[in-house]
Length: 370
Image (cartoon, rainbow, N blue to C red):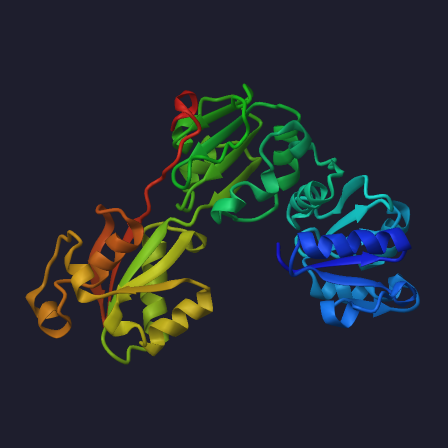
């Protein structure tokens, strides 16, 4: 988290936020004008007069994290009218006036307050106070599971009952078909109430209360029947799309080909990692528009790089015009690091598409291998 404000209204609080300015470069510092020390303009600190309550609405709009050296009760009363949604509210962390305790107050998981609390506490040599059950128990944080890898929850409809199953140690299955495997980061074995399998079918005979499903696939009706109703689905970024197209191909046509191909292959769009092509297409307007619209990273390779990748369908015609024996296939291979394509090159109108799935990597130890 980089977009942080630190706020103080007491003499000792000012000393603390000034320490944080050194320990957390880039943090915006705010404190009351009556504690002015003369170097604020040089250091980029902001002084204010009147009640801090009047400043909070702008902080909530502008910052991802807010550190306040103010009593916890006062902070709770001040921020309560500003709260909207746990997915959008900023992280709020409170520090006592002596700098002994750093308390995670709001948006512990989704907003990152728990992580910010630990960081600030380490910088001040203070005690972090975190009450989120999954953090305290050192278990899976359901609402941000896999966030460090870029995994995206499909929705949050079942987050509360799924979280309850985790922290209450109810029987739970983790179905992982793709994505990074080193998600268990604690220095202890996976809890006994959790079972890891590699497909929904393997979960069918298990008597479990909830499921955490990590997959790039859209679940079929059969898949859903094999899983409990309480389930969270996470979309790992593993789908690499190789694209070739004629010069001037419209964005709508490119996107339509991608969309229809993903639907046919039952691949969820949230799992698209990036789009890859030849460097001759790095300025292709339609392709750039599609990637920008969907927030998909766009990468490209030289003909020499593409020719080093093994492909199933080399073309002398493509080589004549591009210097590469293929575009979509080798681009997908190079982008994903996987030589086995899920979809070999397929031409539709002005667009050629190939798809590769990035293979899972990492391990939680042989006892829990998938």
